[in-house]
Image (tube, rainbow, N blue to C red; front, top):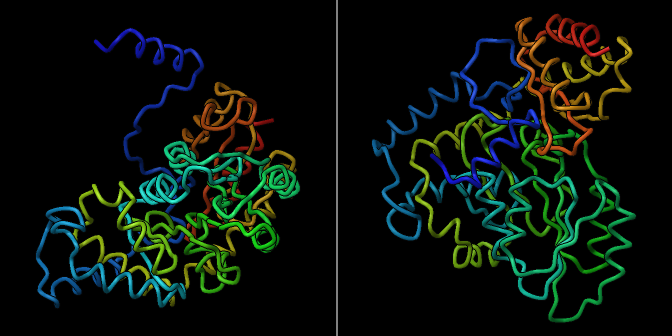
Length: 375
């Protein structure tokens, strides 16, 4: 038995119809995964990874330790150099996951007396990292840069106090995007350090699908490989001096066993394939078609506006949204409900993830079913 306090929490979550469970893998039509361009199942990436390891006589299964001990395999240097070239970054530091990267950055970079301003819808990994820092943190209304400017004017910056502003280029639970150019100008006006999480933009949006921050030069940006890139891990793109600081003070980096060579070789293979894949254009066509079908079926008022691969239909109430999701799943469509407290009460939703491999027939049918079930 678990302690009484823990049991009460589980019971409360159950009463709120919000108890999380691990689902078994399904063969339903995929409208839920982050595998936007099918890279997780890409045979060329798989074969290239195998051939790379074989050609360079790399047969090591594990990393054997943290990067500061025995785990800094030579592939790290090769992959980080390639990422610098692809993303035009002075330096790159690979982390084991996007969560690890955000936790590692925000827990150590902002110092006592510094200020952090973050979008209220920022990912849990960002908020958890901020909670571990000693800086003063203030959230601003979602994508509301006027609210950000008003809050910035309330503080009294000094030579000893740095300002950090953090947002996402595509929000994971809404699929929307802030005005990044204006945000960059605001950061410059207030001498603030801008940090942008590009997790759901990399491999999908921007020139060559390299994200939405290529022309604004933020202080740091976080990219992940477990979504459109179809593999594992993450990286912080930054200056050489910031990389040095992270290596010395980021505890999630220092005290984590490094990724094995196979994971690094997969990042290398996926990053190379990304620059010449045709899947991105297929995905963009599907996103456009999805949006046109939403309009045709008079569902637009239910969806949050998005140009990304994430499209969310608001269905208030955990019970209601779970019922609609179940009805879609029974019709062979894997669409996941997003429940409170993951999102605010009253803003529960179905989260549709569009992929390059979804057919137009599948898109039409799932939305037609939605129109029948959700009205």
